[in-house]
Length: 312
Ligand code: NAP
Image 1 (cartoon, rainbow, N blue to C red):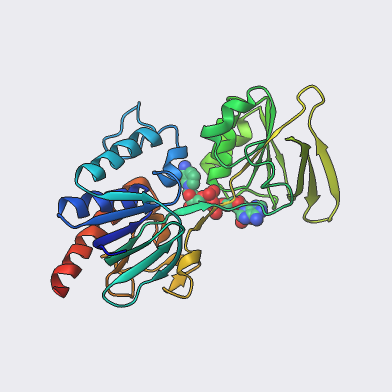
Image 2 (cartoon, rainbow, N blue to C red):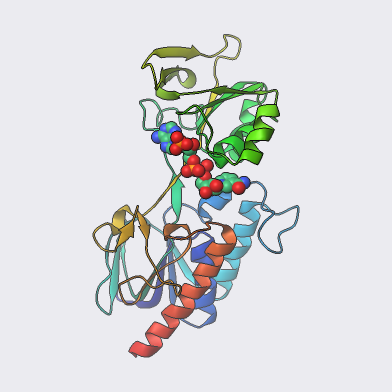
C-alpha cells in the first residue's frame, strides 16, 4: 500500500478506460480497478453503430478491447479487484478492495450501472439456465424456443423484436396494460406476428429442474396466479429481463450525495468532495451512451490533473 497514485479510476467501462487514456497521456500515475472484466454493459452489445467512427464490424467487445489497449499503452495500470469500502475525504483517498488497499490523490468513479432484477424466487438460480439480461448475448440459445420478455420500456420492446429473429414466439410480460416504449417502437412491435403481450402481469416465481421450465405469473389487477409451463417437446423456455438499470453505487452510500442512487457532479465531473470525480452511467445525466461516457472520462481525467497541479 506504499504507492500513492495520482489517479485511481474505479471501473473499466468506456468512461473509466477513457479516463485512463487521458490520465496516462498526461503522465499521471494511474490505476484502474475493475471488478470483473473490462467493458461494463457495452460488452453485451453485439453491434455498435452510434459511436462516432464505428462502422458495421464494430461490436462492444471489439471497441472495448481497443480502448483497454490504448489506456494500457499510455501507462494506466489495472487490477481486477472488488471495492469494499472507500475513504474519499482528505488529500489521500483510500480504496479498500477484496485483495488489497489502494491510495490515490484523486479518484474517478466510473462504476457504471447494472440491470435491475425481478427479485423473485428462482431468478438467481436460473440465470444462465433460462434467465438472461442480454438478448444479443443469449438469443441464439433460444432458436425456435418460446421466450418471454419482462418490461415495457424501449429496451424491453426493442430486445423482444430482436429475439423474434431467433425464438418461435416472444411474449412481452408487462406490469401495466400499456407500454412505456416510444410509439414508433410500439407500432413495429404490434405488427410483428411472432410477438404477443401479457398485460397487467408480473412473474412471481421461476422454476425448473436444472433449466427454466415453468413460472408463476400473477395478474396485477385481480391477484390471480397461473403457472406457465414449457412446451413438453422443448422442455425449457427463456425469460429475458429488461426493467431498467441501477447505478453501482452501494459502496458510496453515505460518502457522497446520491440522487436516486446516481452521483451528482458539475460539468467538470467534480463531485462535492475535492479530488473526487464521477464519469459515465454512474452519474446524474440525461444521456447514457458510450460516447457520453467516454467524454465524461476525458473531462474527469483532465480535471483530476488540474486538481493535482493546484494542490502541489
Ligand atoms: P425504462 O424506460 O425505465 O423502462 C423500464 C420498464 O420496466 C418499464 O416499462 C417499467 O414498467 C418496467 N419495470 C420497472 N420495474 C419493474 C419491475 N420491478 N417489475 C416489472 N416491470 C418493471 O428502462 P429501459 O427500457 O431499460 O430504458 C432505459 C433508458 O434507455 C430509457 O431512457 C430509454 O428511452 C433508453 N433506451 C432507448 C432506446 C432507443 O431509443 N432505441 C433503447 C433502449 C433504451 P412501467 O412502465 O410500469 O414503469
